[in-house]
Image (tube, rainbow, N blue to C red; front, side, top):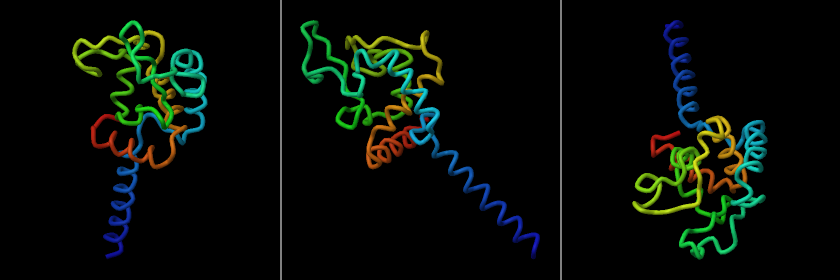
Length: 151
């Protein structure tokens, strides 16, 4: 009976650890080291378009003279948090690819950073961006990420 109780305790611990690992994304806004790295990478590659404070370009919802959209904000006022982590990662790595991350034929000034940033840097940038969001937005975006199956 004692051996069965010990086995049960180990099973409960294993299940709890497994569930916790499933909930962790590769962009962890609570990881202070990852967020600090992401802040530095963001400042180097992203801030020129998306703003030093994640505020995006002025009038980001109105088309530019080129017909393209300005860079959106990444703070809680933007729409970044409306997308799961896998989509956000793909947009940074591959650019805003029409038919995959944007409607077919869509043209954007968003470049691909896959040849410039490592995957770890991209996840760090996302951790930094997510660290600026209020907890209720983070929770909703985390749930969306888990439902999408893309961490």
